[in-house]
Image (cartoon, rainbow, N blue to C red; front, top):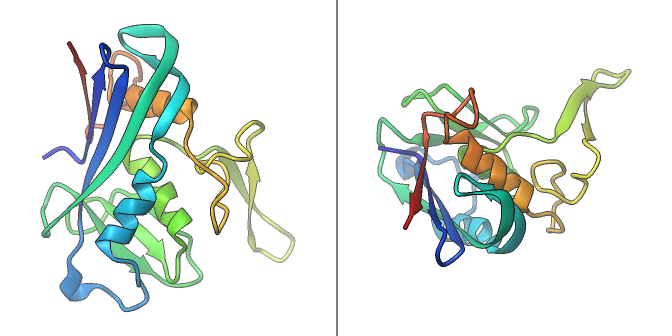
Length: 192
């Protein structure tokens, strides 16, 4: 099973980006108070018209209607698992867990952090650097131009979203001819 499928309809100028994720509710910690529907709605709220998206068939970039989606399935070996970490650990996506892949969420993580982690499952990267301050606390520095981008800066209560640069990177992550670090979990189909 593919975790993320990106479908590009060049004729209609539409791109669908859909992730499949496993969530074993029997072991769901009470700290994650979001339902599957709330998470799905939050991720799909980033859908919309976006400019400057580069595709294999449109190397100069163009405008597309982009639709994000999430499907939750019973525990499966080939999907990402949602797991909970302690309040002192950041949320992240990593290659561990029952299936070898997991979305680790910090206790009480806001929906924006979950949306950011889905950005990784869709094939995008972080647009910030990490460090520590004099007291040893984790710090982040957003890359210039990504201040209002959910993969650069997470703002509780909204205010950040995906844009054409993110979608281009997501497409590139599933296309080995474009990206030597292509993700085996991202599939890209173009038609007609």
